[in-house]
Image (cartoon, rainbow, N blue to C red; front, top):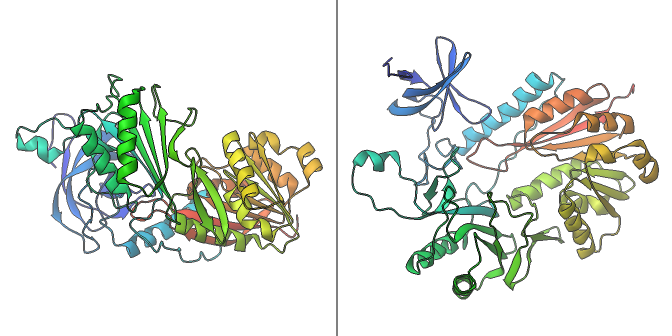
Length: 471
């Protein structure tokens, strides 16, 4: 151990494991030390930056030995970008850790009887699998530790890239991102080049000044492309010239949109997004069902793996065509419309009104007539009068955000007593917590983990719950 004025530097620690949130774990005198960008078997020096009663956190300053598990990261931004932290693990090892994460959390947090978990369904694509990326303009790019340590004169350059993890005002400039297929990289690089050559100012979030703010690129599985420019203020001449340039260079863009965002935050869901050329949406397709994806629409960001996820959900629901299905947290009604032809009726509930408008539109767009959608807080909608008016569900599908479901929703489900509940979750920890609350009436029949995001610690999980026979 080498001491510093504030925190110690621990030398030659062995990375033993990976935590649920993707951090690497070392131990010293039975105290856990969390770090990043390491894999089990690495022997490293760790500079501690935070000490707590039961654990410490730090960053790696030196690798003494590399683990035999280690893979060579394929991206030049690895170690700076927070997006693909597991590039240094072979994909087969990533899947093992995710499988174990689901098993551990269901048993440790849920404390319920868990049947044998099906092997995790890996993603066929481990690069270029995302259909949406959001980039940020910044007046001056983030300098790496190596650049700073070199003490060379480095010119101030603007950035169009991603935020440094945990730093709202720091952005590193992206050369190539392996998450989204072309023309994503080409569009971003051309925008940056044009902006610099033509003197367009990049945003400074601290000073709240600059013209160019954000760039969002969405692609679809049938080849459509949406590009959204977010400007801090309006300058019609500069805006039109930029958008015309991008339109001419990239004729494959089918929806070229823009928004003026003078707010303190980057969100655009509450702003008026305008069409510069093309449509106001792109089209996704699954089994002949088309989904209109607008600038504000939520759609699973791994299109191909989303199809696999929804097929599993439909299979677990066990529909014969006679069931009344409640699709809770329906979003834009993707699952509801996907399973509609297998059910008697599907009722979708979602708290975002704009999403429900999309859900209705997607049903109309596909000629689906056995769906109905409601906007509002799910715990407030699922009351006795609602069940009395629209019927008690035979099957309930849950696909909540990471926080899971509210306790009042659990109570409503226990009151409604559906035969089956299919719980789709992007957070197995909160899923396990909720399943424990449902345990008095429901048992787990099937568990299927699905990897939606290769090279990250995130894992999706689908659980089939069946009503106990004695309830």
